[in-house]
Image 1 (cartoon, one colour):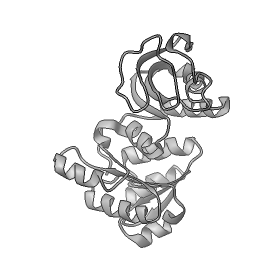
Image 2: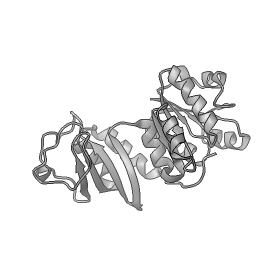
Image 3: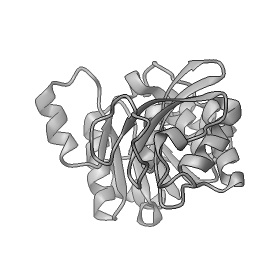
Image 4: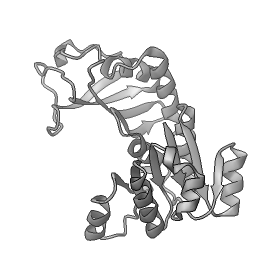
Amino acid sequence: MRFVIIGAGRVGLRTARVLREEDHDVTIIEHDEAMIRRARTQEFTVVEGDGSREDVLDEAGIAQADVLGALTGDLNVNFTACMIAKYHGCRTVMRIDEAYREGIYRKYADAVDEVIYPERLGAIGAKNALLGGTIRAIADIAPHLQIVELTITEAAPVNGYTISELELPADATVLAFGKHEQPLGIPSEDESLAVGDRLIVLADFAVLSEVRQLLVGEDPKQATANADADPGIDADTGGIH
């Protein structure tokens, strides 16, 4: 997938690194010279300028991009960039500060695909929002443990199994289960797994690839690459830009 990220601050740059490690194409837009140098030192393609300007977005390849992540600290820049990206058919993910009142949040949330609070979620949340899809990292709770939400797909080997028949690796545990579009709850052994159902799993990084293969149906090479990339995400609580 092709991503355009506006803002080369701490979370923006870390999110860009994780996306690149998963073989996605990432272009960054930034106007601050020091941040531009840092991103280019890490061998990112960087377009200098204001991310709310259409000519700058054009230079970054917005017409060919799949997703725009507007991750600056300027709400007006983020929103304007998202509106331009929507015109080009991109998925739009916009940063908003926690300080904004609920009415402001709703106004912007209705206009873009997803609103995120990077100060709270860090790079994990930003990456999840950008990618969407069937696997969402929720939290790193220890050096080698992560809680993830996985959505059962057609390709999942366990599609059609009951919870009692589900055999995860020894270092992985189901914490919660929810039928498609239903609230999460404590799993019952008789519940059957179907496409769209969600599982919250606590797993050691060493077995994440195996868990992905079972519940999502990723091939072994893809599952290993994705699992290896997750520990590199730093749940940074600092500002982006």
